[in-house]
Amino acid sequence: MDTMRDRFISTTTRLLDEDPRLALVLAEISRDGFDAAQRRHPDRVINVGIREQLLIGAGAGIALTGMRPIMHTFASFLVERPFEQVKLDLGHQGAGGVLVSAGASYDWPAGGFTHMSPGDVALLDTLEGWTVHVPGHPDEAEALLRRAVAGDDRVYVRLSNQSNAQPRPVPGGGFLSVREGRGGVVIAVGPMLDNVLAATEGLDVTVLYATTVRPFDGATLRSAVRRDAADVVIVEPYLAGTSTASAAEALAEVSHRVLGLGVARHELRRYGTIEEHLTAHGLDAAGLRARIVSFIRGDLPNRVGRREGPGKGADGGRRRPREWRHEDGRGHRGH
Figure (cartoon, one colour):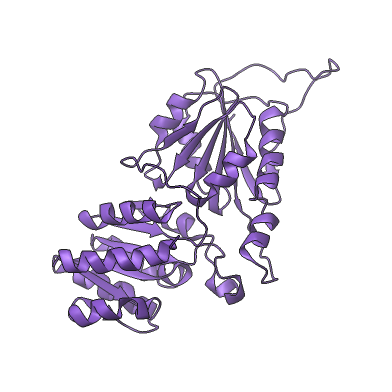
């Protein structure tokens, strides 16, 4: 199976042939993959070199002429390093464009922390008007890329070397229900789905699959939870807790608990492998299951919309609400 980055290169090459409005701006990364496209379209395939601020600035300028730019490099160099240009050249000027990243949170561990970007989606969350796609399979990456290119808005497509075994349908911006249960809801984002399905095997929970996380599909989440109470776990392949506020906002009228699992804030200073990083952050199937079971089956604190006093434990004593704050996961409790 090809990787998401391979599929991005082949799909974008075809799109450049099909759509004269499309332009591609590179900063060295993936340059060799676009050699043929650059020969055919030298005026629309532009490599600015290792100048990431210029990458965004040039893309924004191209957008202001009425064209549709795709800007591509590693996530840390696409969102974090040129963030001022993302904020001003694209956002402040109202320019549209498609950011397509590679590398994700730790896809190239040997590259070190400079090439890791677990905070990219959280950073874009500080800006308005961004659609964020997180595919979990190369087929999904192609579908989401084609959708992004067809519009005029600002879109971030976050590619990863991590991939689910099988593609899933890509709804028009909504979550997809892949398993139904009554004991809680687990939202798996992009390449986290396979591990989430393995982790929740045999548990009475609903599993929702998200390939578009911004805008956040609060309507589908609300329809999946019980009307009187909701236990929700969000498993994201980037910074833990990135979407807990969005989930809490969606459930403002429902008594709820939300646990955000993802990449921890503490830096892992050994290179390791992707699998070792997953395990260290508790994002492997075993780590996820332990925390999901603990959360779903744990003592319930007071919830949003509930004015009752503290409950009683099994021994008849008064039970104090717990904080859900883990070394590698963030939690939210509504009061």
